[in-house]
Length: 404
Image (cartoon, rainbow, N blue to C red; front, top):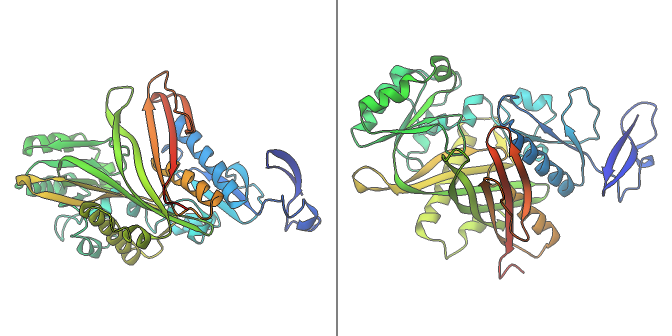
């Protein structure tokens, strides 16, 4: 069986290996130009992360990941398709079960850009906090020991899977100060409201669908005043692992709502130990990295079957109730995210310059018409999204002065 693939910008006819009656693999194209596998995108949920800019960004990243791995980019995954193996998957979201992963041929972090969880709720904000008491509702597979493992790594809060449990949990938190109510599947800072009293809390909860609450839950958390949000993450693609820290920026979308606007990152070649080896880290940043590491290890220990090649943790620091400074992991991301443009730019640079060990990179999401990306920017989306309107997304990279 033959297939047309694109290699170094040229369309070539390739004999698919492993198909009876075909020529052996080395008869297809020369070893120095033949791709060594296929990279595909895959939609975990057709109704999620499916806007124009998300689809276009995912394709852009998947094409670049294919180039990094020396694979052919084969488009959106087709269950009936025949692909050169191995297959590398770039999903829209965290894979919700090991069964789904196995159906795609994913058995380790080297088979995808993202992560796999044993149950869907593990991929959401809901696991960050415990439920309010032994009788509180919780999904099947919930591990109460997770919350017991991370009290020093998260803010004060509860997860709830019913409106009554949410009311009780919220009132407990209101005794100390305002409460932030967070929809667990919302992203980019959306789906959050702050309740200063019981009446406001009830108003937040009344608008929530009971079935949605039971299936996915809601997070109730102490509110921080003007918090600084750090991003702490790690990515592994092929033989290269990079780790990073940075901070997020907010912007206003075309409706005037404050949303995620980008990240400013420092990325190093290697693991978290390389990040922490920097003696110049500010104490708050060092704490944020440590809290992210604690949270990540607790997921590994409490939810067997979890693995990820792309991890990102948001850690917020600011003033809580009574003017007490607080720090804690807000949520996790084991899928393509806002920082992925910087991650890909760094991976590409590390591959091009093996002596480089550290870069500065930033991602930018700018709404409105007439946006011009600066010189040197790597633009991964520019257009008019049917849902959010005009949007430009790009990354900038600067090698560190002492990179070589």
